[in-house]
Amino acid sequence: MQYNTTRSITENQDNKTLKDMTKSGKQRPWREKKIDNVSYADILEILKIKKAFM
Image (cartoon, rainbow, N blue to C red; front, side, top):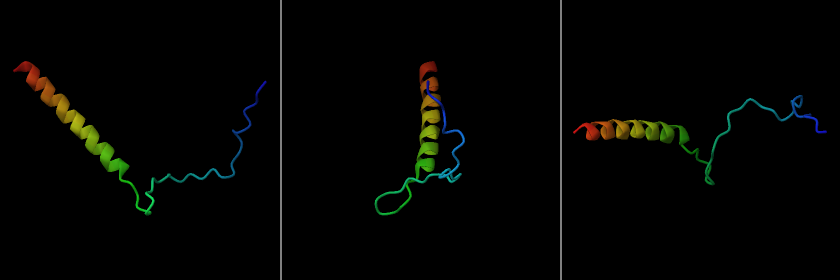
């Protein structure tokens, strides 16, 4: 039988947001890329719908 003993461990459990860094120390802009990607997908969906009606 296995016990889940990790529920009460609080050491090394910071509430900090992780950051994706490059080798040179710059932060990768994933949030901006994701927002742009979703916006682009929305635009493509609108264009596809308009194209289907023409």
